Image (cartoon, rainbow over all chains, first blue to last red):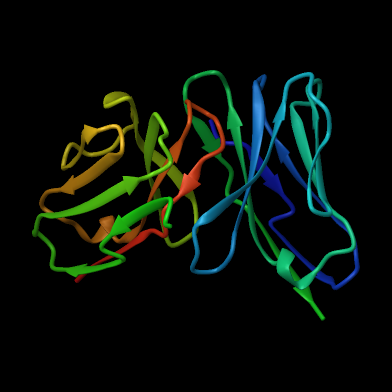
Length: 109
Length: 112
């Protein structure tokens, strides 16, 4: 069962902050975040584990709320290089990741 | 050095043909995957192998057959190609199941 990512798209100016979310209807073992730039392969950002701490990749951080079965990705002081589609992959303990449909992020000067 | 390499990068062929995509990883990972990304960018797992053993076989038509000759290679053979097979196919690898995955650059398959 795939997670639901929201909002579908975000446009922000360089230096602004944004939050994107990944929600599941089932209990999760972990959440993985990837970023894919246009025409390129997805690139791993971070894993959030059950009971684990908030994680960080450069100025991008993420949290995992086990009770809400939700992970949030915080884009702080956004840079042009943050543009891309962010995918969350949810691990339900069944040997695979279920990817959401992605959050498209566009950072403009 | 390329960590996960796929060939070919582009594949344009006619309906009904048979084609193969090759994938190799030099990271020493135990697990390899095939994903399909359609025009709506939805990334869907097709197959996963761990140490040459098939562990995930999603509801994929049996025209698609993966083969893993060793743990560094995972190839995908597709028979009787159909229009709906047009997509980008990504190979990925990870140390263990559900560890960070490294993706290849993708193979863009177009069916005429």
